[in-house]
Amino acid sequence: MRAAVLAVLVSALLAGCRRQESRPQEGGAPAKQAPTPAPPGAVLFLSADTRGYLGPCGCSENMRGGIGRAAFQVQEARRGGQPVLYVDGGNSLFGETHLKADQVPQEERKAKALADALRTMGLAVRATGALDDTRGADFRRGLGLPEVAPGEVKVLDAGARQVGVVAADSGEALVKASQRAREQGADFVVGLLDQPLETAQAAAALPGLAANLVVATHSASEFSAEENRLVRSDVPVVALQSKGRSLLRVDLTYAAAKGPFALQASQGDVDREVAALEQRIALLDKEIALPGLDPKLKALKQGKRDELAARRQTALTAPPATATDVNGFTLRFLPLESNLPTAPDTQALVKAYDADVGALNLAWAKAHGQDCPLPAKGQSGFVGSAACADCHPDATAVWEGTKHHHAWATLEEVGKQHHLNCVGCHVTGWQQPGGVCRLDKVAGREDVGCESCHGPGSRHVDAPSPKTIVGKPGQAVCVTCHNTENSPHFDFATYLPRVLGPGHGRPEKSGQAAEPPSK
View 1 (cartoon, rainbow, N blue to C red):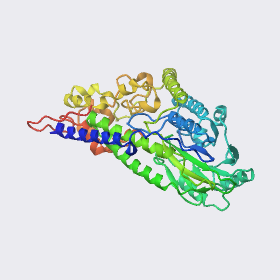
View 2 (view 1 turned 180 degrees about the vertical axis):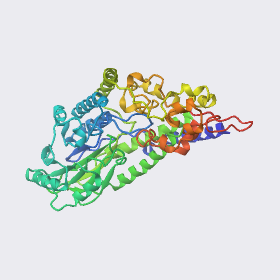
View 3 (view 1 turned 120 degrees about the vertical axis):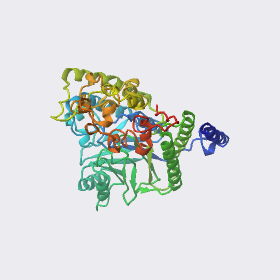
View 4 (view 1 turned 90 degrees about the horizontal axis):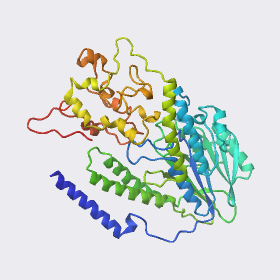
């Protein structure tokens, strides 16, 4: 019965694909058309709050982000003939303000890779924030990037107009800097405010503000900027999805005579089309991420998702349909989807980082690594999954059929088994008392083992009892790794049955074979 249902679904999807091929205007690759001449103007790209991310971790499918994809968008725009300026709002080089000693080699190497990548993108200027000075202002300045200091102004040529970029860490400083930008001849002013969105909204309403656009460049916390935000007001305010997952594109259109710029409302049809496509893409993302989905059906859904993402990208990057007799601007977020191309020169920098950082971290661990502290008196330590197998053979068999059992191998396959950003969710007992705290001493603790969910087991091994182990772990345990970043479509009720089986949380019904766990 299941095979028959699957066959019907596959046939329906294939038929839909054939219909799309016969009517390319509704999907697939857009029909070849003569390029639309760009009106007089310029294009600005803005990034902010990248938090030390060269790209997504890759734990889930269809993850946004990647400096190589961002670079491709900027490079492609430069082929259009208009002046293109790339500006970074700051808080981009590091993910936290303080580093442990073992993090320093990796994070410094990553910051240098990010700086090199920004250069390949033709960075015009960037602001700075607390997450740029994690290794000190001297380290940041040593990267040699063009900067605008807090409270200062940088005026850039943008063809027939001048664009002023101002940086500030308070609303009052933003007002003063924006006024100086106008005095220095800026026709369009971008304010980079080192504050969260709510604070930036208040700043945009201050009297005397001479900016056309305010960008909030620092999200309140690591997971508080999961979406792009645009607040339409007299001075629009934007906050970008953090960790390099989106760019902001600003298209400026110039009239024959200079004058004030106005946010254009003629993008309504495009906005509605993009919103509808995003809803369909989000639905497909959830379906694609479902555990146990048949590979053929999954491939078809992925193909449809990529088609919709391509349509959205075309809509977002087309020249704006604005009147040419006004000085106007449009704002569009460009999500850096997984199916977008990457700039080869920038991606080469990422690959060089990946090759270097594992060796750096392993060398540091061997030279300076410290073992984890012993558990406090009366508390359990980690013993490894092998210690569980003798007494729990059925549960062990179920675990060996899950992805948890292969967690370490997934890192080895991509050469990231010595990346500190990744290892903690792919071994058991990382950085915990009685666990593993050194990259050179992971042996025996590889994979997401029994103790990752049930807690350290030394007391349970010595005196088996339900009281010495966590019998039924709850969702709080899972989301330490299956969080919104690494596993954005995680649903506890949906995923839990994939790691259960006879002898491991689910009794086998008499006369009926149990469904095998997800592999």
